[in-house]
Image (cartoon, rainbow, N blue to C red; front, side, top):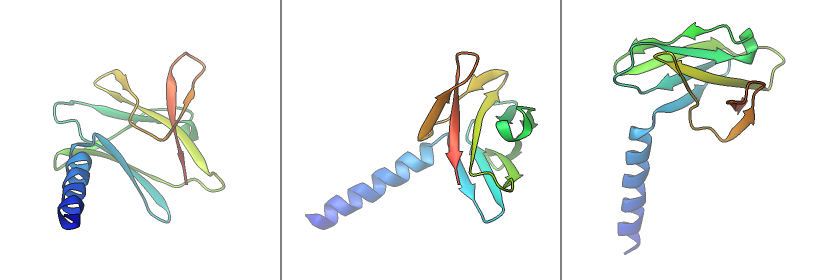
Length: 109
């Protein structure tokens, strides 16, 4: 019975992560943002570390990827995406309201 429950949990975890539209990989010196939007034509990353100047994701094997160097002396960033000119706020653990009535994700590292 326990083996069945563990197997079910593993399958559910794999299904959820495989369907996830967004995730972030952190390394010692960089952050890579991944967006799984099969029908998207353009994905742009906006963050407070570059004064919200948009940076384009690159398409790579079904995912859109944007990698940036971790900024020195910064412990968090605020960000959002635009997907085909529409604001997209990915799932994130922490959110904050911006000055325009929208929301931003906060990523601590």
